[in-house]
Image (cartoon, rainbow, N blue to C red; front, side, top):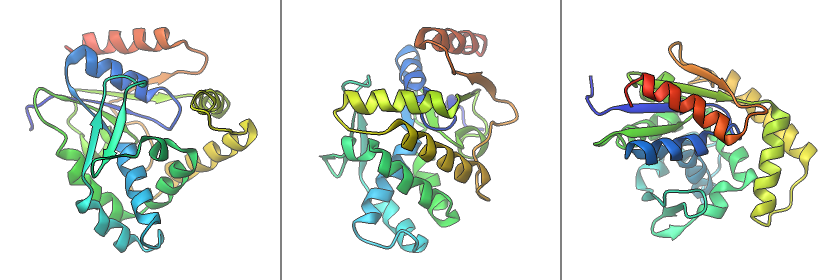
Amino acid sequence: MNRIPVITVDGPSGVGKGMVTRWLAQRTGFHRLDSGALYRILALAAANSVDLDNHAAVAALASGLKIEFVGTSEDDEAILVGGQDWTREVRAETTGALASRIAVSPEVRAALLQRQKDFRVAPGLIADGRDMGTVVFTDARLKLFLDASPEERADRRLKQLSKAGIAANFATLCEEIRARDARDRSRSVAPLKPADDAYLIDTTGLSPEAVLAKVEALSVAAGF
């Protein structure tokens, strides 16, 4: 068993995983992995060079991507790929749809699995994703699974995009979220679901402070 501690925070998009994992990383001093960003980065890189439905070709690109996460808050966080800032493109709603398409591929998931495990370095790791607790870090000391209604998540996403100066439509966002959820929850490889030993937190209608209070109580109980 790996002695480097891990806390996993799984769940669909728009439930507050980023907020929770950034807070946990600051609280513990652990490193942070945004595994969803890895799929988004690979999808973007592949869309510019190969057919996304050619999963072998997409998977082959994974090992050559130099990826860095910098910053400690949502405002100063940046995603660097090959030294270039891809943050805006990676966070775009359309990129999330592309990532969901390639995430169903066993070849792609296998290609990114070791890259994710390599983020586990001292003093510890906070891992944000969809299968962190069920597949990648099954021995994590604390596993959380966040969820929220599609309407709540669409509203949050609309506000986030508006703040970034990106136009979006609430109804369209709802439809995209439901479609992505269906793909993620029904895929044959690593479907989106809570680990058997995960703590479930429904963030619908909760303030950020209320969510973090629940997370703090669970993390303290787990010895963090």
